[in-house]
Image (cartoon, rainbow, N blue to C red):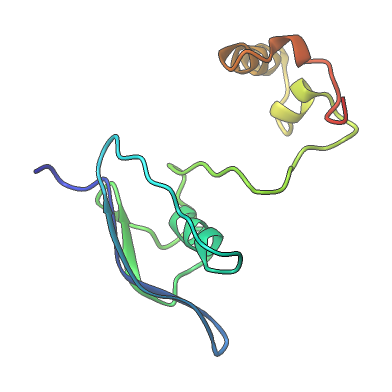
Length: 127
């Protein structure tokens, strides 16, 4: 079998004396599809934040594409549970936030087209 795309080895996460995750082990291969399921507060989002490099793990290691994750993992993308849209900006403006220029606006529109939402480019999140 080929090498795993990501390996999580004995990863634990603690906040002070509170143990959130303990000795998590997982290997993921290209084209794997997994779901993290569990009760609220069970550590699912914490594990995703560790994989993304948003915060450090307390012990163990996470290896992604043969590199140990020790800081922000720029290859990862994450969708938060809560919305992160700025209500005073349109959908298109939210997508291109912090970028400038006509080329960025065109890229935002092409992304909306990719997911079939181009008709909502000038709508506000509340709409």
